[in-house]
Length: 607
Figure 1: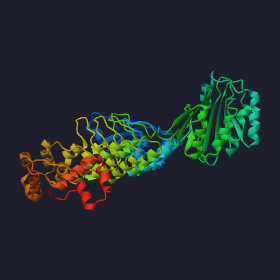
Figure 2: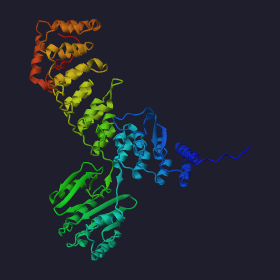
Figure 3: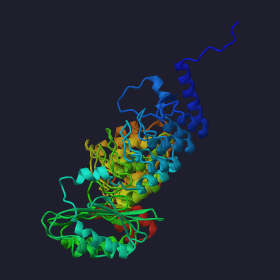
Figure 4: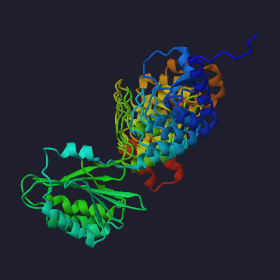
């Protein structure tokens, strides 16, 4: 018998290499991984089918029917798996071998996976290697939208605060400047060189006579130089690009100057003054760009995150813009040229799906107050709306109730407080005309209702079905076991909410038969109301027996006899104050017990 081993087929060898590659990824054997890649035994972007029960690697479009097998496995490249397992060494090896950093074999890029896994080290590496920060997954989410847990907050901060600057290479500059700008006259170059050499600055021409890169160990002297008045002729239109690099600090400052074709030397006087002003700005890492037009100066002022931008035109606004720049060390000037620096992920970018939510909506949904504060600080629009016209305040209000546990979230309460402090519109209405107060009433959340009403929420605004907030509380009182509906009714009535239509009062008893304190609050808002047979039918026998003292007093008071003079006086005062009850009654010179009585504080019995 021949003991010689059978030769391995080509397909079997490929499967073996693929299996070894996958094992090296899972075990973080970066040495073995590097050896395989150096020998070119496998493509660095090979796609594997791996187990993925939690759908971390996969992303699908909304509304697609998914076969069951795809819910348990996903396609992924080596980059995705390295991020999934948190193997930084393997990630670096793959990137060094030119792995496609924005590959989406199953709908997500490695950066999306890194954010969902809250792997900060991987996020930093991917950002440094040029990952697209605003790239959509197949489900339409950006990397910021995948930062949904407290552990991923640092990832979101990394995405927003990262600083990236694109510089044109020689070929791009040649295409850009061809037939658009004339070359800088040769006789002006020595003037610039003399000024730079005198200040220990080195000039590197990236493209002859049109693009300069200045290497400076101290950028301050450059800004004090009157170089533009010295080198710019008033005859020839041209364009200068200057990149200033500060070694050891890692700061890149880019200045772009466009001379208009009008032969008007707009740069000669004011620009050197502006540059010296920028040099004194506390934010040494600011990027300064200027674009000059025939009609004057056009500037775009923004934070380091590229947010809160304001365009200023005309020389009259230069001073205000520059003063604002000096006062705020996070401010920088930035124009709209293609080579402008890109500063961080877009904090206002909406999802590319039917929800159209911003990262602020997502942070509000998942109850991340620290991330909400960070987004707003970096320019997130507080009143941005999604596809349903819901603001982040409305989202946070709705999700403040954990429906499964029927518990209220303190984190969402804090987010609502923060958004209101950031001047969020408390009466913003969605496409069903619901306000945040409607959503708080639906949750029977008296904490948020009090917060909204104190912030100016209108108690009588109606939704598309003609329901005000008090009707929402009425609908859910029986299904919110941990709520305090009596406080919700009390708050609304003290803020001027319309009372329930008397012939429909039996619905109040139907909803609140197990919460007599809520019935007491609502009944005491009327001067007098008469009971009918529907009331008794709405009360189950066990609740009637359990709360007999209260219901006996209710039917006694709501008969043909009038209410007490004290109660009628309360109604007269409340009718006069109307929506100001909550604000005026605490200021009255009355005993505390009388103030509580006027504010409909329940006592457990009606008289």
